[in-house]
Image: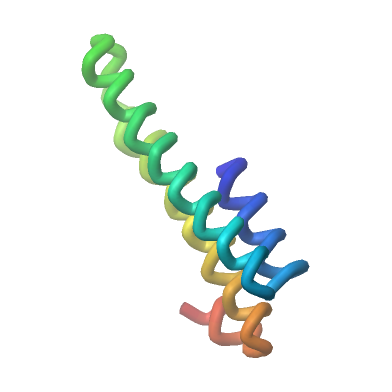
Length: 83
């Protein structure tokens, strides 16, 4: 969620080419972190009953942060909030 928050802030405060590129890099970093935490849990034998919930809920929050930031960036905040 950290990288999604940074990416969303970059998208809102610097919608130019540099901000967009930095946001794209933050999205990729978020995806790598998501991949690694799941792999570590499964391979390390740390899998639990609530594991899928703890894995998916932060991902949905992170995705929502980025979608809302995109709505604000294009000047249509309702489009990012009402999905």
